[in-house]
Length: 166
Image 1 (cartoon, rainbow, N blue to C red):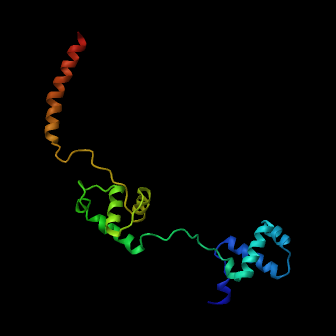
Image 2 (tube, rainbow, N blue to C red; image 1 turned 135 degrees about the horizontal axis):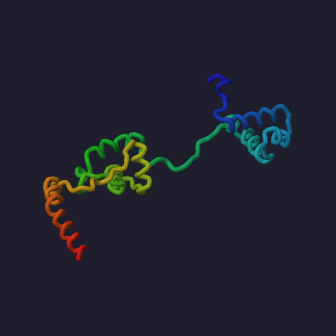
């Protein structure tokens, strides 16, 4: 890696820390650096301490730690295929996926428990949208419903209108 590219800042905060280091190397006092950079003397002190202890590279932006992912990228890539088999293939009644069902599949297949909210984030990550169960029964008979509406419903309406006249 060439020397110039090595010290290229990734963002403005990083650039500010590098500039503070450069100014200190030119003999500037911490309070003057702080004033010029628009930060506290304490911030400058921390930056310079970091750079002295770990070199200029210690001033680079670091991503937050946080816990290690419990599912690898490869496992997450498997989710659409597993869910694509259908909920019934995993022993659920009906072919609708809920977050609770997906959580059970993940625990069963990968041995990793997840909260329902995190399952929602995983589903969003793999591009799965929410599913809502179909409101109508699969055995619904549209022709019978139409007959009932045209015959029985009209009769009921007539009876109601006769009662209202009394």
